[in-house]
Length: 465
Image 1 (cartoon, one colour):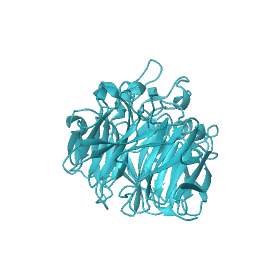
Image 2 (cartoon, helix red, strand yellow; image 1 turned 30 degrees about the vertical axis):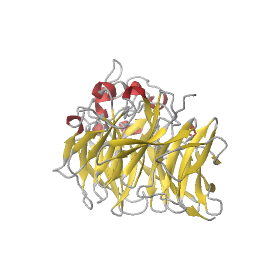
Image 3 (cartoon, one colour; image 1 turned 90 degrees about the vertical axis):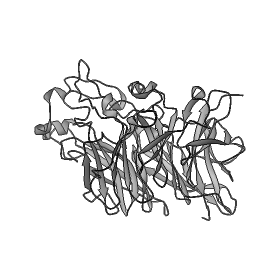
Image 4 (cartoon, rainbow, N blue to C red; image 1 turned 45 degrees about the horizontal axis):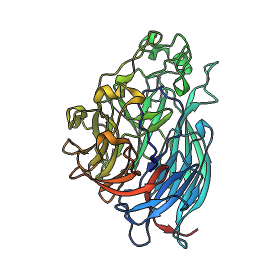
């Protein structure tokens, strides 16, 4: 049997502010709380050859399905976002150029996925849902606010309306966003408590920042003396390429329905910045529990910023940790903090997702802190369950394939109190979904998929055009 692969969603990521070049990996945002009842169908985006197809299934727990000669052909995508059970968005990154995308519905008359709307939009590095829109953000050079020589950096937003197919855009200056002179990017969006939360990542000081806010340079030796780096991590002399604040986390809270307002900024120095990164793309490590409490997870990637002979960086010291902003509050809960590296198998986290209640699925560095420092060669095939209220981390040690045979883990689909995660092995079997029960931390093999890659799993309800 030919070996088949799930897309390894961010499987070599490291949240070092300027490390990797652009990417085309595929990620998915799920629709928790939904189930395939009546005419609802699970929808799986599977790639065979150069084509990506949407195929349907009534169950994720058993059987085998194929994309060969089946399903609805799509434009493909760098990101897959389920907007509830109404729409599936496919967003194509296009290597840093303007993006293209489409939304799909489960067509009522045929019971098959069909294209609903098409979109064009600006470059994406993070994404989510806000009201009627799928939203995206990235940080780019602007066209104003110059220091006489360099453009300031701007946060650039896209609002993709799910119902009418319209795309609107917006911008906000990213320079000195936190009052520390650094420009920022956003990482992940969480809609909860009638608010929008996003993790704000300080990225260092641009040429504009260095020239405009010289009093906010903490150490003159941090300013690059020569050009260096590569891809999205490249830099030129005269800027500070990495954050001066690796051991701080910042959350912006928006109360309205657009990024035009001034957000409330919540800050802590108990954990490092809350994000993950693959090349120029970001994924979120902030999630809301069912009661609205926001849990902010930090992998502790500040430790990976190390100085070289030609560039000095501020190296973080904080481990993987989690803090909480209680529902309705605008400050971190001073009584809540857990060092994740003191729990379970005592390893740093790589990624995380909310499953149900206050249970979170954690993807861990298999080889511990040493593995994290290994960068793109790190092994991240270990899973754990974190019970947030209790501060308990339990390794998923039963039901998964042998650790030695797992080659990658995909992005989970969390529904009905459990998580379905794609698992790829090197033992000759096709990729399969494994159902993980958070209460027991036990995995059970579910459906297998015959395809080259599987990019998304979720649920759609029938709709008419």
